[in-house]
Image (cartoon, rainbow, N blue to C red; front, side):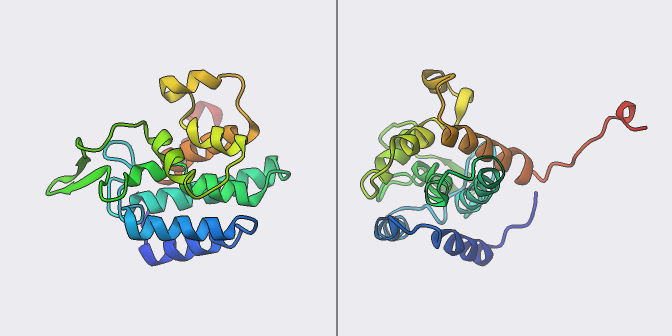
Length: 194
């Protein structure tokens, strides 16, 4: 696993924040809410799959936003940086839980799911939290809601009708979690090397 430095990622978060221009006040109000009322900046990204560590959600969210902007730049420059930053940073905001009720509880062995939290799929909780602060486009709402793609049953609801933003958010999320965060080496099969 690569090294993660909290202060460095806060700086990256702030740099990404500068790309939000049209909804700057909404963005700042939401970030203030996340800092004061939730565990967004302290929670792990997951208890099972990736970054089960303090600040893991921040590291993952920044990584997804950075990866999303790279993909957007190469393949879909017409998409706005602002949409990519909002969706990249906050697609998993639901993993912070709700005000006063974190999704992940710290234990001696790491983190576990808070079973007393009102049950919602993480992406739906993300949309629930974000929509209290942001006016989202339909594309942004779809991207946040279905960013896990076909890995969850709900992904079938939009199969073959994904917007470009959803498509690249899903890939950025998957690539960040499974390649970048795992520090996966590129393996060349000997039969392909001449």
